[in-house]
Length: 91
Image 1: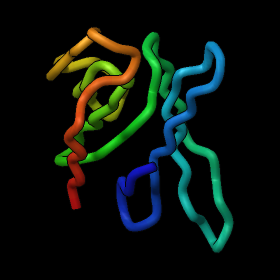
Image 2: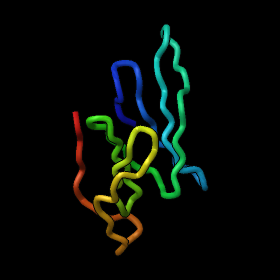
Image 3: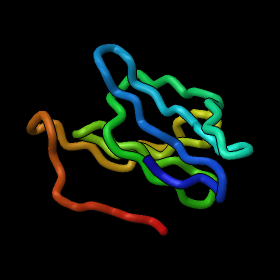
Image 4: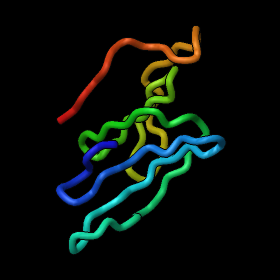
């Protein structure tokens, strides 16, 4: 999960064949489901910076627009099921 704005977060959903990002906002003290982006790859980790989403699949790091368009595959290592040893946190 990552913060998008003062009242909105993006949550990765990855179970079975579902690979998605669900946007959730707070309105009047209630959680409200927003839009949902679907992906062909696993959605394990997420970060947001300057209107871009960064998603990890376990073996790759992707850069997406907020509308779900892939802008770039930044890194991929398929030597194992889960690779990488660097954690990036963007405030």
